[in-house]
Length: 375
Image 1 (cartoon, rainbow, N blue to C red):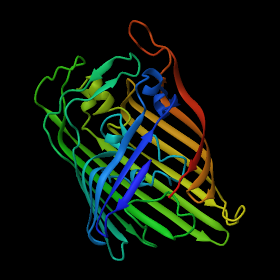
Image 2: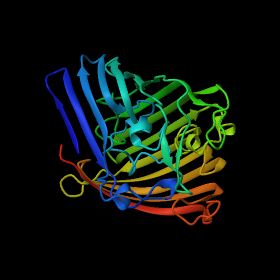
Image 3: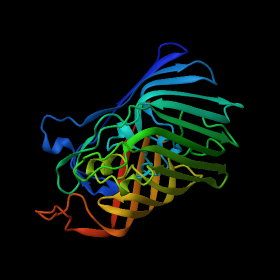
Image 4: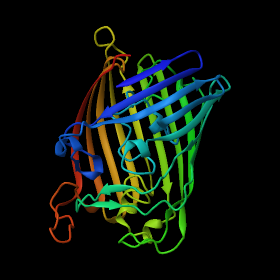
């Protein structure tokens, strides 16, 4: 549920919630039970956006509150307009296991454009890591806690892009403009938070000294889309490097490894590439067909108990735009491969050591999405 409004030409707001009902496959992490399945009092509704808007001019605007972290193009893609069914399982930055932390955060973002909005900037200061994080261990089921934040510091994020063809409208992006724009945009971003995590921590969570590590992240991305009489070609790519200076080698606390220095959103580097072709003919009055392919390659410092894990993912899909992005049907097949045999979350474990008994090196998934929006 999204509510957006403007009080006048300058001031406005956005409020958005999301739900995740029922058991679902969580990418490389296996099966995840929502709280709705185990807690009758949980309604599984989360606030993911809640911010004030201040649009002063084309060159200077603000978002203040819980809003997207403007590090990558992928994260700024419209939730209802990615090229494939979703952005990626792996493209988000630190911290935590909640999208309200690795996708959004509390803070302020200044953004604007120059040269007819072809050159655009984003500059943000966010809450960043705060306090202690508690999460459920994927194999033992125990609640594990991270070490405390060494120092209360802000996370700083900056991003710029340049549009060599048409300028992309708004404060975010679309995975495809359905042949309505000619686009070739290249962008890059950086993020930094000093003294984010303790470097030397035992497996029991005891901090050994005052040595700390900084959080840094670097991103590069592009989108090319060109309409012709014979159809519209789209190609996009995203690179992301998240770095905690190899702290996983000396910080053995499961809480830190799962949600701060390592895990799905911790230290890693990798990329995805996607390509699509929008057929020129219409189905009925406005229906459009857009097949696509994708490939992802990610290296994780420590993931699910394994050091230096690599995950590759290849997929094909089909977007059927019944009423542009407002009414859309997407079918997608994904093949996920692990470089090292890994335990699957939700499978059997040893009752004494909690080591996973069911392991795999790959799995296949087929996903379908029906999207209906009223805007």
